[in-house]
Length: 406
Image (tube, rainbow, N blue to C red; front, side, top):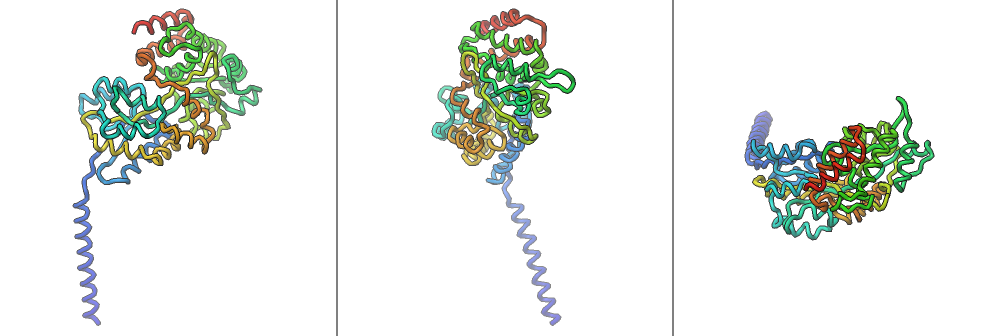
């Protein structure tokens, strides 16, 4: 019996040794994964969680690549890319704002991925204005990641208390903002929007200009002054804070959640945070003056030239699966760039219906002639309007001259 016990122990010992050896061999034979780096300016909790989930699921789906992502502020994004060229720290992929694509393509930053993904892009059923943002001279330089636009998000409780209904025209909107403004330490503003320098402020203000009936490619049209005059009146009567020039779109969401403002202009990405805060909210289209103005925003995935094109394309293909795209968009509060998915999402989440319906007649900023120039002039003009005592006439003159000096 003792010999049998000793024999059994010897067998177990040998098996354990073999097992350890096998494990070491497997570990040694495990492939080394190539590192992929993505840059993004996403900063809301929902956006970060969605990007974390996408990256984790991609990493778990294959063994060739390991993706990670880095936050870079939107206002510094293109500048940081330029700096990264000199010190060889460029990422492999960028999640970039639509209008930045033109400059990056013209500067030679982005890889042409027509051969790898052109056919898939053409057959996917993207919104036309969204697809246009990744195509240049019949070549494809990116994959649409999401799309969006802005609307009026309002606090139902505040509107009911003030006896105000969601405004449909500028006249109703201006009157509603006044009625919803409560002075004093415990008070709140009627309306707020982002007028931050750069893309965010221009993106939010441009729909008001288009609503005047001004042509998007002739923005020196005197009807544009109506949009400046509307904002000037609201700043003057105190229904809108001139500190909006310091607020990003994310800051505006915080003001709304803290009940410092009754109505805001913002996008679908604001809804996850608002719902998490338990705010009873409603959404209506931006009020109309002479027409409906809608600017389409959103981001694209693009590959940096000279980086890991093969790995980046694999990541893009992974995201381009409809079930993956829809899951990430729902989590982030984004609208899918594929029209059928966006409409399906809207049926299940009717609170997004205004944003989805506005996609039908919105225009992409890349469709506006010399958008980057327009953005700079518009941003400067807004800061003069919100941050100085200049008259609207003086501001309009400088704006008009700036637009014409292309």
